[in-house]
Amino acid sequence: MKTAIYPGTFDPITMGHLDLLKRGLQIFDKMIVAVAINPKKSPLFSLQERLDLIKASIRDYDIHRITVDALSGLVVDYASELGSVAILRGLRAVSDFEFELQMALMNRRLNNKIETVFMMPSEEYTFLTSTIVKEVAYFGGSVRALVPPIVEEALRMKFNAPQGL
Ligand code: ADP
Image (tube, rainbow, N blue to C red; front, side, top):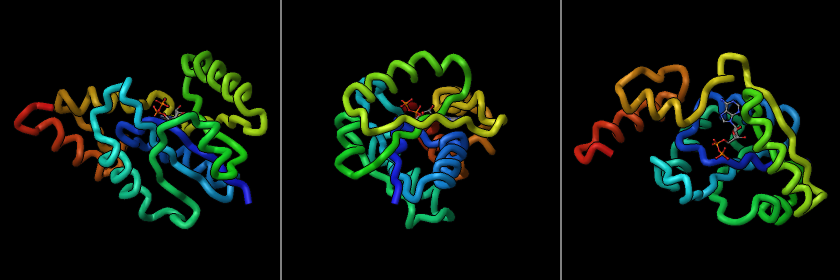
């Protein structure tokens, strides 16, 4: 059985992330969505919120083949602990490439048994990032069809909160 880790910040999960997860499920038996705690990025959504939004977004999927978990240390250590053979990453535009190459080579250096696999999303999600979704939602624009409905609602609540978070 082949398992892959799909690591990321998922702040919040978008249709682009889900597109990639589905593609991953086509070639791996099991996918582990690993949500990086990533305090450096000061996420809008707490770790628990990000985990909950992912779980709620994949309810209709083959959930027996998906695990959603938090990730705090090195991805390669986590991957080998769980017996994963690969790390799945998305490549949207050329701009992703340099950083992803750096990271893939560093991860290989740390553990050469784990391969990084890159996949491209469907064209309509090529320019979709969590950052752009947050920006549009912050200014009251519609992010429908770019994020699952539950995320759309969570963004609305976040930005309508009295403290203006
Ligand atoms: P990170 O902080 O690790 O980049 P993200 O949540 O932004 O976390 O992304 C996690 C992974 O999902 C990355 O490999 C990223 O390239 C991929 N990804 C994010 N958005 C998309 C998208 N629209 N299409 C394809 N892959 C995506």
